[in-house]
Amino acid sequence: MATQTATAAHSILAADFGSVNTRVVLLDVVGGQYRLLLRAQTLTTAAPPYADVGVGLRRALEQMSGILGRLLFSGDDLVTTGQAESGVDLFLATASGGKPMKAVLVGLMPDISVASGRRALASTYVELTDTLSLADIRNTEDQVNAILRSQPDVIFIVGGTDYGATESMLSLLRTVRLAVLLARGQKPVVLYAGNEALRPVVKGMMGDEVSLYMAKNVRPSLQDEQLAGAQLELALVYGAYKSVSVGGFEEVQKASRLGILPTAQSYSNVVRYLGELPGAGVGVLCVDVGSSTVTLCASIQKEPYVSIRSDLGLGHSAVTGVRAVGAASIQRWLTFNASESLIMDYAWNKTLKPSTVPQTPQDLEIEYAMTRAMIRNAVASARAGWPVGQRGDLLPAMRPIIGAGSVLAQSIDPGISALLLLDSLQPVGVSELRLDPYGVIAALGSIAYVEPLAVAQVLELGGLLNLGTAFSPLGRPQAATAMQVTVKRANGQTTEHEVKSGTLQLVELPTGQKAQVTIKLSRGLTLNGKSRLTLNVEGGAAGLIFDGRGRPIAVPKEVEKRAELLPRWYTAVRSNV
Image 1: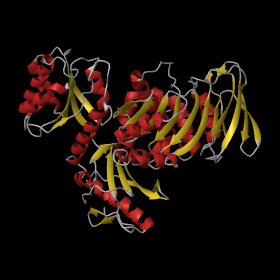
Image 2: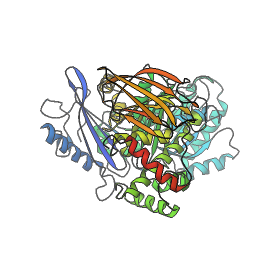
Image 3: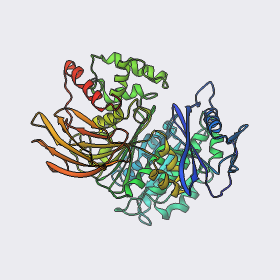
Image 4: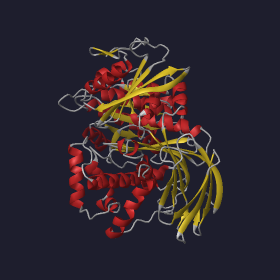
């Protein structure tokens, strides 16, 4: 693949390599603004018999070339001349598939620098194999042996405020140096993001033994946390790791302007941008349910929080995911009796053949149930690090909520996507729901480093699918009717709707159309702390969704009752029914 020159980028090609699918998007300037011009999707070819992601990438580019009449690939090289009839100006790549990096975290205080280090590592795909700190009671020999047994791909060193005390950090650095010297075969990468006064010392101690990366101190003072620099360096380390991993990423690494960035880092960039925009709620949430991971990216009070669960997923991680959430949490969303062995059999089939899709209605139910259970489990673990009050299993007010990954963003019906988000996240209040069916978030997050204007313009011009607005009252309805709704459209047409307790109701309002909604809630329910309110909203692919089930959602334990209730919920949100 050809290497690019650093020229102004009008046409931008971005590829995201997942465990199952490779998604490619093309952005170009149309009418003076960046727009999403075209997308393509193929199966990822990192595994045998191809063991080369370039094969899948070329297939996607061939699809695009046929539609555009524009040469994007010539032989084995990506065309980067950027002429009107051929090539692109800029190529970028992100990846989430494959094995995560093994990491050892080294820091001083578990609740300060080590905690910051963990949050920095959460931005990329790592398996944390060991942690060294001042609270570690092991002697130096045991610590060195622990690092050697872990065989880490990266040793991430944090700790010490800038130009503060150094003796404790020097002791940990000596331990790392000894482990690196004794390591056989491929030496681990060392990333240092601690006391800046020790940078020359770290360079001298590590010498030429390792590939050394430096980042700004993640904790320059006790009160100040700065993760952006370390997260960017971790992204570069991840790119280098992927380039030498099985799957043929080396050529992609060379062709991409920034190497191969972790997909989660791209998600974090986009969510951070959306979190800076004015709007209601405490922040923005994006949930991506993939084959190997479930990723949550939140911007809360304008601070990004990333959580990657590599033990959860609907393909490669299906078995570990079922074990992590427990069969009971999946069974509670099914209309039929499903034994634990039946669920595990389905999970094993998905793990062995991740690209397969559900073949029967029961298979589809299990897949949707797994989706709900895994998202809920991921949110429960991520919320411990969010600076917002806890309210049982309920989600703090988020606006918007974005769904990504095939099961959410490419569902058989937009209403089903909305239902899965509402069931698994249980948001309270008024929520704007969006989807990423085109895979643009991964692209835009990497583009943000070189052409930030493209991110703003593509998002503004419909890069994400507006799913609609959901109204989710807090409490339990104490009457047969949960809410009385009046919808007044921009053309003057007014409709009234009665939402029964324990049900959902979808009111069609196409994308781009606005309406004034007046809601009168029954006793026991409140919406944004009120029993009656009027607000202006915008429609979407699923329209307006009024959730009369209350919060938290009560799902019957008896399978007979679920068999009667759950199909009603599915039917209520289906826009094509």
